[in-house]
Length: 503
Image 1 (tube, rainbow, N blue to C red):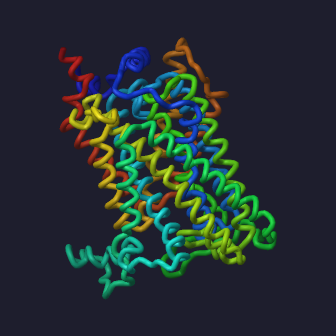
Image 2: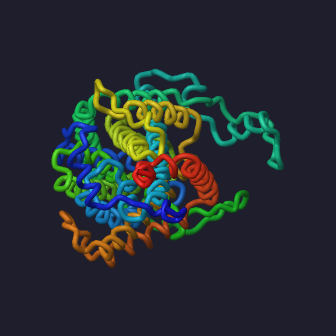
């Protein structure tokens, strides 16, 4: 087989369907509502409790609701394509596996490598937001962590230490430290705790996750149900604040460009349903339940996001919403201390479900890459005691703990979205390609108006990528370059498809 042939070798849909029916790596224990809870758990979290307020304060003003709507439309197009794939190929690995069936091995590796980083970074971002709400609760009880343990290092503090280690290299010298923050202990601790939970039996974690999601949804409904009586419509004017450019940095805020930038950032909050497709081999009836769970989870989440965005910017001026516990802060400002504490408690309990969903997704993708031979088989060993991919799960726990402990939330959140948007583009393109190549396949769910829906999903994803800062591209390119090195040094020779070719 020639070099190009190796890059595009792929499994047929029939092969994947047959493997799904015979593999026994995981136990099938998840029903429709547990899958939907994983999806809702992955979508609703820091987006509502942190990013909605922060993006209103930084980029979009009250029009953050429009930012969510833009991101939601693009996400819905991709969700419909995911739903068709989930019913067609019920195998763990989500977009990675779908890419393997349609585009070939190298494209599948790129998607898997991409999503592995994205899912892990989502865990880190959410852990940082979770830590902010935990500290609100601790403060209400009179407990305060030492300053060094409260937050991760600021970008300036990190630059200061890097200059001390590696020299200036053309950058401006930083004279001293801006604050005493060093390591976010709570964020690191919860990342490790979720990894341990996911190492034990999947159904235990799923039951815990379903209960947590229920508490979270009740908390969000409480925000809307009480907050609607305190809305001052004057806070919505102007709905799209005029564009402002910082004279010192040249960075612009607000205006319609700010709304698009806000959509690019909050897009992080409107995907997550894809994590439930990574649990395909743990679903009782995957071809029936996976498409339903994808669409149900996104529909419920979008209604709640729009409602909370309007309530938040209605009860207080958007400029007051920049903190890491923005929803609690908003109700504190209008004198509802009891509700502020209750929301913080709901956020602390509820946001753990996002950690659960994305850690589960990252571990299953890592497992799928190793099972297919693209990474060492050592990572594809299922724990004989618990029936879970314990090795990648615990390594991810350590990695996300370090990232959440050391890096500020903005630095991590910006890197998350570009990879997921790239995967969405590939999924939407693949579903059209498969309709042309294999119109004969029995599809349990068909993407409606596919020749409109899929291109629209691609267009939205490209537009949102365009709105991201340039440094995000640089970091993404570095990660992809590392992935290419690993593939050409190891995966291209050791993959199961390569072994079949030699046989």
